Length: 264
Image (cartoon, rainbow, N blue to C red; front, top):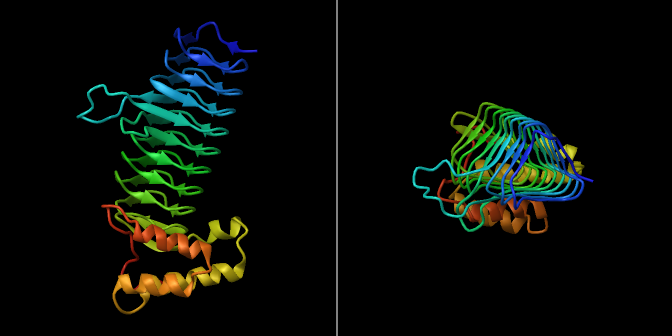
């Protein structure tokens, strides 16, 4: 059974599952779709063509589905889709995307207070964004990545699977899967060893990944040749192959690399 506070505003046309909870002074727009078990706490605003997946919880003063913050936006159809079992804390903003895929935030994510997801971003499953972390437009964040507090990611950059972005970092290039990037401008500081261990990855595989990392970023010869060599040497290691595929598909932002002499 729905539980909608009498002060909440639900515009005609909004589609809410039968067990949605909507708190005081929350506002839900006419084109919004909210699935089963979702909780919208007080003062939440959900607008535009926004869909919120099952059991997601949205805390006070979050704003979801507002138009892109883009000076050339002229009212084109813009969408947001948020997966299931995601936690969205106070003052989070997720802007609608005007591109063909809109803005997507995956399943089981945790967006802490003040985090911002800009237009046309694609955020995978189980991503954590700490307080005030910011994604520029068209950023891709793959599954399991962690964006530290007050970190900012430049538009069109990619953050690989289970990468870790240190707090206060400014990321302007692609960060490889399982990598750790810190600083302003961020440099690659090695692999996200803590994250790998927490994922239950065997010690032997972590050692292999570290050896591959050193060969990639501290070996001799042309970088493109080292990529090919590592791809062949570790062809049976699925995680190293993810790193290779990510590098080969790098975007216009370029690749985040270690500072000279710090690829160990």
